[in-house]
Length: 138
Image (tube, rainbow, N blue to C red; front, side):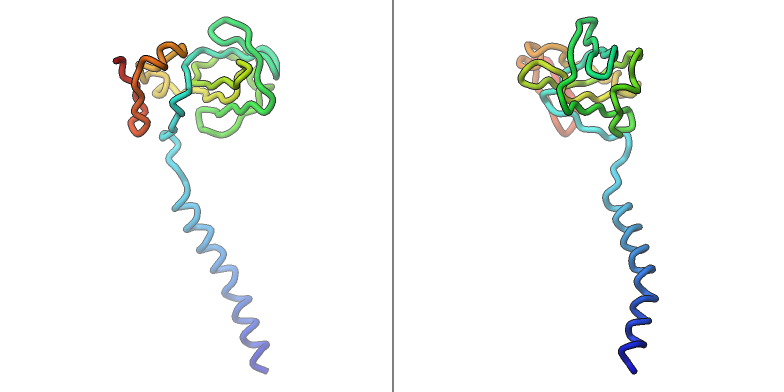
């Protein structure tokens, strides 16, 4: 019967096809680890985690918003409980209630990029080039 032969051929080529697709997808969609784009609304500061829901931002106490996201230097998500007692240079955004919403822990190279606004006033006065990830003081 020809149906059985065709089915067994399809079963034999299916793993090879799946492997080729996985390899192509990994190559096409993997971003370099050192190329992170921060939003224009991100400010810079020093964050120290004091509990899973609390931190200090530039030595002032602040709460993490429900659902806050913390990106490590490798851009992988990090749980706040694992960072208690540690300080990091970081870019961050706030939610409408003033709680920390998104935090990017900076690598040494990212922390060296200057200028970067630390206050909303600076953010409003400076110009941001998203492609180059650089701020210029007007």
